[in-house]
Length: 156
Image (cartoon, rainbow, N blue to C red; front, side):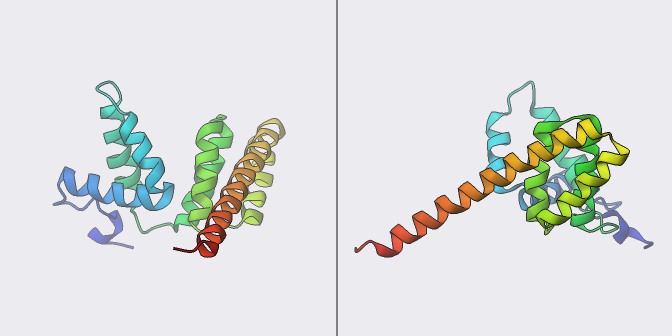
């Protein structure tokens, strides 16, 4: 791909606000509005510049680029989190990967691949992290189903 469209929201004439706004859209789509709202609510004078940077550079500058699918970006990100032992970030990006359309079987295959290239101990922790994430997601889904059922059964 050539030309200005290859850069996602980071076009030659894009303002910092346009890049930030584009990054925020993708960040919310991938991580979920609740997560992003929590991160923004927790920022203070010390962390505000960091939150701005990751929204503009990671989400606006990289995740908006058309060169890779979001599924591929999730696979690469999961691998990087395993390689560096960033377990909380791994959990967040496993959830994001499911939002981006990766199945649990595809995530399992990514983690198996990391066992070879990142090491078995890291993959072992990654599998445990994924189990916890999937368990929490299943519990959340069961809770939502129970709430949906009780709302349907209640009379006004």
